[in-house]
Amino acid sequence: MAVPCGRNDHILSPLGPNGTPLIVGILNDVTDRKLAEEQLGEGEARFRIFAEQSLLGIAVLQDDAICYVTGDPSALTHYEYRITTKSGDTRWAEQYSRAVEYGGRPADFGGGREAFTLSFRPRPRGRLKRRLLSAWPSHASRSWSRIWGAPQSTRRRRQGLRQRASPRPGFRATKAERMASTDLAFGSRDEHRAWLQNQGALPRGFRVGTAKLEFAPYELPNKPAKMNLTLVTLDEPTPDFAAVFTNNAFPGAPVKIGRRRLAEPHLSAILVNNKISNVCAPGGEETSERLCEELGKLLQVPGSAVLPCSTGVIGWRLPLESMLGALPSAVSALRADSALSAAAGIVTTDLYPKVRAAELLGGRIVGIAKGAGMIEPNLATMLVYVFTDLAVPRATLREMLPRVVGPSFNSMSIDSDTSTSDTVVLVSSGKVPCSDFAAFEAALLRVCQDLTEDIVRNGEGVRHVLRVEVSGAPSEALARGIGKAVVNAPLFKCAVAGNDPNVGRLVQAVGKYVGVAAPGVDLSNTSMRLGGVTIVEKAQFFLEPSKEAELVQHLKRAELYESKAAADGTFSPPVDFPPHERAVEVQIDLGIGSARAVVLGADLTHEYVSENADYRS
Image 1 (tube, rainbow, N blue to C red):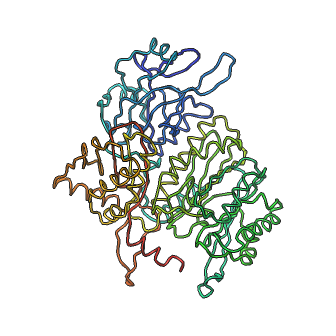
Image 2: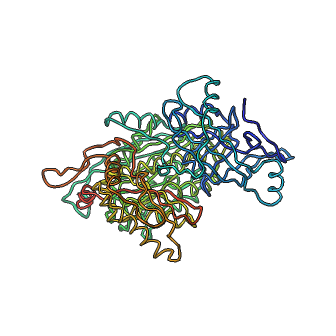
Image 3: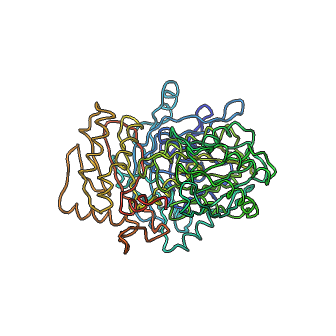
């Protein structure tokens, strides 16, 4: 029997036993999520799930209330539900609720996958509070969960739900909140590339093409270099596009042009070159505009409808004549099958291409990214391009994109350096009607968060991904600042690289940041965990010999590859694919507020130094 639905002044909300409001069933597996999307169908979304201001997912009322969430359910702060007014219009209304119980790792339901249970107690205000409290009892709620696992009958699923115990009050997850929606593992380069090819199936209305060229840099003519030109075109010009750019005060010429392009009525193409970033180079803007004009002639579109992007060495000039000569090859290579060739074309020191996708509402979202070093973004990350055939208007895209980059690209740092070329572009071909912008934004966030974790894992010389969850903070800004202070702390990063659980460096990094950014904050209730192991409780260390071995094992398990020096004494990664998606899990609870943030970072390795000591060659 479906979860009953209560009605209060045209407000629909799922109600559990005894009339308690609840959202149930967390889907946290790729297969689960695909099944959920098939189950939801088009236009079925009834709820939007939030952590503070970050949209985590959507939910529907179908059989049980199915919650489709892209992040850690313990982060949920409230949800919105669709209401129908007396005039028949629909809009979203916020339900002021807090997650009061959170459970993880229950009994083995559906093939051993993790499942989570959430229950909500109302936290309404004003007149709505009086109405809701008259209908919803304030005593403790029971928790239900919809488990998606191995095929089983509806009766067996329901039996499993009834037999499952409620989570313990005050229970804390031992894992930091995941940013990515997947937990993948690959045994070879070919296996990974096959997965990327499938992910990269282009939305309708897009084509991509690449061309290669060789040139002698003007600044170092004795060092021949190679460059890729990557071209993305639309079958028809679109007015529906958005972009955000770096905050670096020395932006590249393409960034300056890109900001002007936002005022143009249509976008027809994106042209990306690697190897040279075209930053502060003589005649940089004129060179980029010339390339756009010549490409426009080949595509029969205005040059102002072409968006240029560059990445690579800062300060060098673009080899204009060589690039002009390669444009016809890029145009003739245009194909509408997969974005993988474009993802591979935009890389520099990346070990492998990055592609993520989502399908919903009969359409598709595909994102590609380039970024391996000089990454602590402000508004964006290195180079990211997201394409969709779902028809989302220009104004809506431009409202969504800043909201999405906050909990994704703005929540990572590899080396604390903000690039001069950071760009995120979102483009809709408008080929498929979009009936639910909330569902679209949730899927867009999922794609961007997946790409964020891919960028960090593929960072220059990265052997360990750091996933730092800061909770109990007085503000989200402080939580994110502490997270970035940890992932940018050189001593802690080096300790992680050596599989050395030197947790004193973790405490030092937190204390250093708070002492400068928020000196009045009381840290006496602070607790910290590494790999789920408590190391600090109420600002005191809790260390013992048995924990040391457990912490070392956690660090080694998160390692992507073993570091070994080559014959010439340099270090380089021995893999060009991600063996797994595990991370060093750090949890910091200040115990003084409700704000939280998750920040991704990386260790500091021999491989990073080798890469950047001789980058231009």
